[in-house]
Length: 170
Image 1 (cartoon, one colour):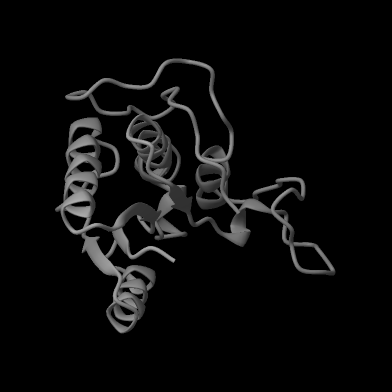
Image 2 (tube, helix red, strand yellow):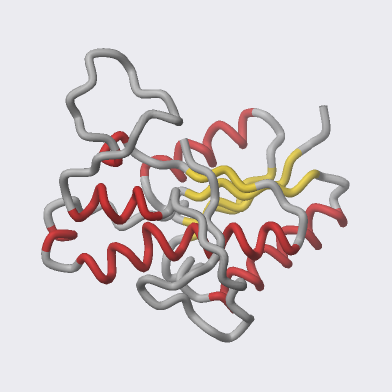
């Protein structure tokens, strides 16, 4: 198995810190970035981050991977700021997917059970029908919907509702 170099946008949160800790135990080079260090809604910042990952991985003979832990997670606040939640939770993963695809870097996108209706009697499967009941759930579910429009260009940002190809989430 090859050694990994992992970029974790949203790395200052609980998931990102856990990934960083596990990586340290397993010889995985993890760069866990905060939203201030890597804003997933800014195409240029994402392109720079993914490019740096690829160059670092190559120099260290590692395989580059991106694990997206970036999210607008203030569930209640998303009701009043759905536009910002959409930018981070839907457009951000689309920007990451486009930039990772252009650099042939695998992307793992972490979603939430809030994308489902919440009435299941068994654990959800990735292909179960969506049925979000909140702004937060709608914005996370939107990341699962691919678009046919071209990817953004470096220097632009992804406005809410933009049409960058989405990453498959589970």
